[in-house]
Amino acid sequence: IIKKLKATLKESRFNHTLGVADTAVKLSKHYGADENKAYLAGLLHDSAKNYTDDELFALCDKYNIPLSEDDRKAPPIIHSYVGAFLAKEEYGIKDSEILDAIYNHSTGCENMSLLSKIIFVADMTEPGRKDFPGLSEIRKLMYEDLDKALVASMDANISYTKMKGAFLHPGTLKARDFVLAKGKN
Image 1 (tube, rainbow, N blue to C red):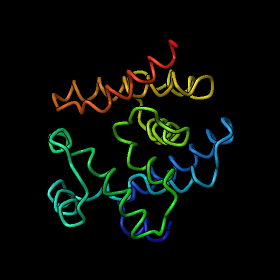
Image 2: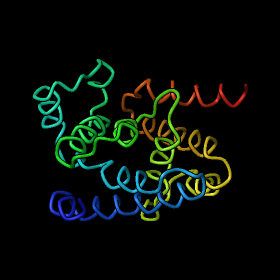
Image 3: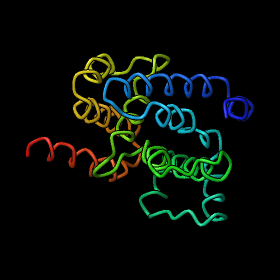
Image 4: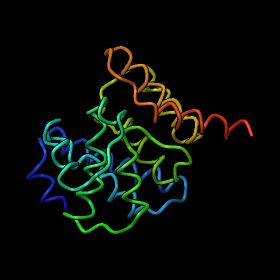
């Protein structure tokens, strides 16, 4: 997997995936999740990141990967759907928990598994990630309260998307609100 990823990803993206995989393993150890699953999901989460938007749309059409109207308005998230497909078809991953973590790492979803939360947070906090508002707080929270780190990560994504003037996928808001509501119960 590493050899193939190194050949298909830009060097900076490859280094990012290694950082996410390592961070995911650390979080898995801390929270009692399966370290091997975390490592694989971390490695493969951005396996489709270097495709253009047009290529991603074409792959979704070719392989019947369903896209909602909201998905079509937010092309940067589509790599996660194609990445889950590639993980299964190109890399032989059959574990649904790993595939779900890859699929949901861009927007999150309601009722995320522990592994999905770990990959989402690891993607935001891996050591090579450049500083952005709230990063140091998220890195602190990720070993104190994973749900709080998850919400802070989603908040950072939301702020960044708004700052760019891009379409905010409602899945992120639904995922965030689900975590917040669960925390209040």
